[in-house]
Image 1 (cartoon, rainbow, N blue to C red):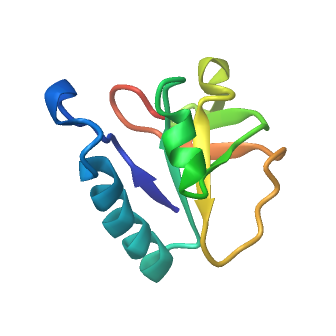
Image 2 (tube, rainbow, N blue to C red):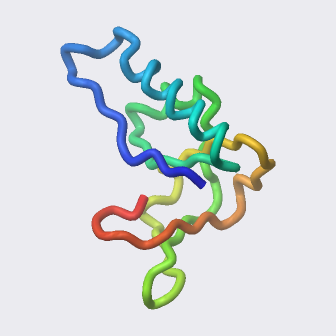
Length: 104
């Protein structure tokens, strides 16, 4: 999976197509190199991503840590996926790799 870390546009530059252009390129790369893309979203941005074909992950989320798989309940409902070459079960468990900071 390819993970989109963050997308942000300065407030005075919004609604000019910048985020859409950037996401278009990111989605092109996801289609060319990954089975699925994923990102953590905010309530404010969910409609933007949904209009582009991103789907809300409805199942439980987890992280693969040095101590094993650990549930990330705070992230449940806040992760979107962008299937490219596979069909995904949006109600299944989704586990990301561990990293410093916010894992999703």
